[in-house]
Image (cartoon, rainbow, N blue to C red; front, side, top):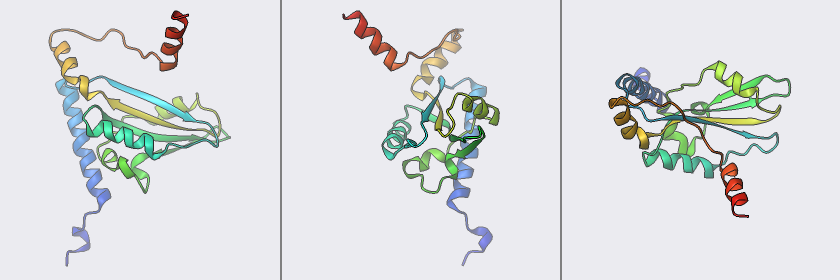
Length: 171
């Protein structure tokens, strides 16, 4: 029978894998091999907080396909007194499809980031904050950097704005 000290829990294995993945991320940073990094903040109003299995399964599918690598994913709840409660994904009991993602998080968000994000939130709401690397674009980004190129602008066009623009042009 193994000693209690020899028994390795799933959480310890996940922490070891996270350290290995964080080291790989640091190595990629040093080697300039990362793809573009993006983040989103999705707020769920008070009483409507429902980040369900459908969205999480889609996120897991993107990771499994190698399209993205999740660098951080946290939930922030803004209390009525403006204080915040932060839940790291790996601290949840039933991760479902996020189990493999949680094991490889680099945890790039700092407490200051979360406080800054919470300033835009309504009291009583909960937000999911997702930071990811666009691994699909890494080879292109690396080639551009190796040839002396550098990113000088980047932005997102909200889907609703694009649809509204296209609709108004068609009238």
